[in-house]
Amino acid sequence: MPPSPLRAAVLGLLVACAALGFLASLEDALAGYDARQARAGPPLSWRFGRAPVAALEACLAAARPHLPPGGVVAFAGPAEPRGDAFLRWRWASYFLPERDVVRWGSAAAARATHVVACRRALGGDPRLAEVARLPAGRLYRIRTAETAR
Amino acid sequence: MSVLLLALLLLAVGGRFAGVLAGPRDGRAQRLVLSWVAGLLALYLVEMACDLAGLRWSRWSLGLGLLAVALAAHRFLPRPREAPALASDLGWGDAVGLAALAAFALFAPTLWVTTPDWAYHWGLKGQRFFLAGGIDYELLTRPWSASLHPDYPNLLPGLYAATALLAGRFAAAPQMLWSVLFCAALLAAARELLRAEGVDRAARQAVTALLALLVCGFALRQLAAGGADWPLALAFVLALAALLGARDPELDPAAERQLGLAAALAAASKIEGVALAAILVAVYAVFRGRRLRPATLARTALLPLAVALPWLVQALRHDLFLDYDAGGPSLRHTGAVAAALGETLGRLEWSGLAAAVWLPLPLLFARRARAFAVAAILQLGFYGWAYLSALSAQRFYVLSTFPRLTLHVLPAALVAAAAVWLRERPR
Image 1: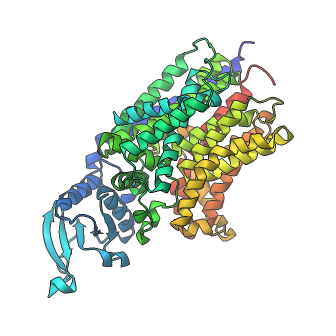
Image 2: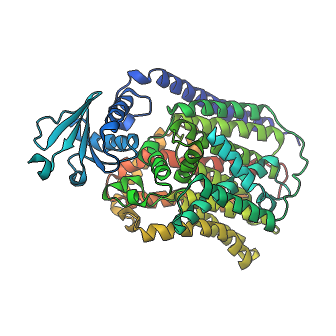
Image 3: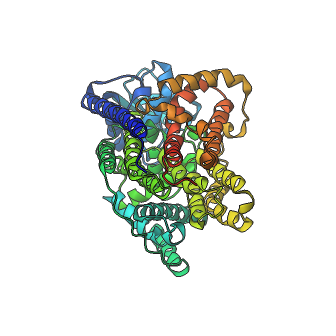
């Protein structure tokens, strides 16, 4: 039995709609990819390749050789807006997979030996001793009672 | 290269399982999909066996484990029957589908369409498991690791770690090809099901093109590379043969085994998949009714149980379950969740065809698709239950997760609708 013209028309319409949607998605993806370095935006909109993600990766990669193997590292991103801190920390954990990364200022930071500060200066904090300058950041060692003496 | 090599290795390991998984109406493409999924689950089970035995994951331990599975399969399973000699029916829909898949395959390794969840947990777990040579319970039990979903089953992180072990290093870009392979398997399984269900060639080509354009467009728009929603979408499509045939007087036993395989794939992938696995088996059993023998039900449930039990044992042993798993739904959140769901559904992309998410509702009235419709509605209901159980930020939770969860249901709903409404042979 040959397919009815109505069925063919409905299917054709659906495929055309899906094709237009697909092409729009492809065009958006291409345009976004081309402009990836120019885009900033909050961490909720971050993707691999975007300027803030690349900057964070560079900052953490520069810190890596100075960090002792294993151990816990605290991460400090920009202080504002506070709501972004969680996602920045998740990205930072991804870029330092060989270490446990915790948020600077959280209770868990008490276990950290170092702080990687990206796009944030913590220089006035007496608990910290600067170890290295990083691309758009600083690496600090956390002074313990022993090392502060 | 390591992804393709491992994918081929898994295909070879799973090849013998096609003897019990493929039915007489399953063509070569479907046999490849079933073999590959069987290989994936073999890897998962070998990794879990190493985990339970305290053995470090390495090329040797995983390789020998897979070899043992392959040898046991060759010893105890029947040789796969020859695939039926079906006329080649490649057409314009397949060409469109391949083009859409190629676009996804080209984009995926750029990481531009990678889900942020890759950074938040899937990719991080994969790297940590690679470095630790196994499931890194030290990481998963840290007080600050709740956001890693420590309680999730580990099919994908294990797959990513095994790929890195084969390559000798962890690189994110090639790992994205796993999502492309899952997408390809989904499209192939859907196409094969339409043929087996008797949908005519013209309609099959149109539906193949439609599905590929929708799914690949979704992957590009919703950043689906690297995520764990693909295995669930594939599982639901693989379960269709049994769900659509649940009321047939005679159902090929291979369809039931495919349901078991699909449920196992879901259960190994995500916590939502554990729910999907239970729903698939339970709905099938209810719809099959008296025609289902207890022994058959036990065989169908065996593989999902074999996959879920080691995960459950380890999750309980290491106390990995989080608060949100323990709490029940609160009706106080109904308004917020309903409003957020309405907002999400209004914004869903799916190339203007997001209404297809609702297909399970009309499919309730199609006798042949009723089992699928009930399973899909229950799965969507499970998401509603999870949203109502969230302790806070329900709106954010819905907006940030529901769009990608639709991938679990929508492709299978489209295929079920096509199988029911476009079939040539009435049943």
